[in-house]
Length: 261
Image (cartoon, rainbow, N blue to C red):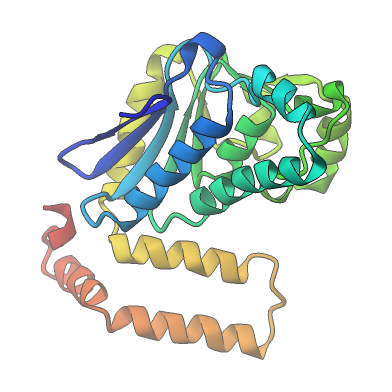
């Protein structure tokens, strides 16, 4: 546990990272961004961790940038603001590239930079009561640092609307535009999360890491001979790995693979 978040690892290999600034709706400041980056880097290297759930305490997932922190940065130089923005950029890069499945457990308000966190997670499940807003334009700002991940999730067409209007939208709309995968009743959020974790635990951890690498390489790429060769090589390589051999053997032997034990 740190000043701004908690990290709990269960015996099945699920690490739950919980934003823990409920008194300010888990608003993002320099301290939280730093501590979350450090925690995620550590989990990424921990072989006992199979997956990561990003959750939050209190009424909100996160209200975005901490206003007190923003007021302080308004008095700083442009170079200092650049360095500050790079801290968030580095956090998003670490979360996006974590070599394990990542799940956002979403409730309450999800504003500004918090939408960037959601977009960087592999899977996002939200309470039907969750409310979203890319609110930066109301402050005379733009969601620049989170934009690569958000636009990848919702597409340029939806970004044109919500980056400029800064309007609020509900969980159903967030699902329609591709920001989240599933909307559930508030009292079913943990049940749905548990079922998803069961599915993820059934898959091979090395295969999951390779799948994330595959998506980064293939998404948006031109389908040409080079890409065909890259994907064929990965297919061949994975078949010869210890995990691949065990998975095929377990399937043919009608038993669970070792990673499920």
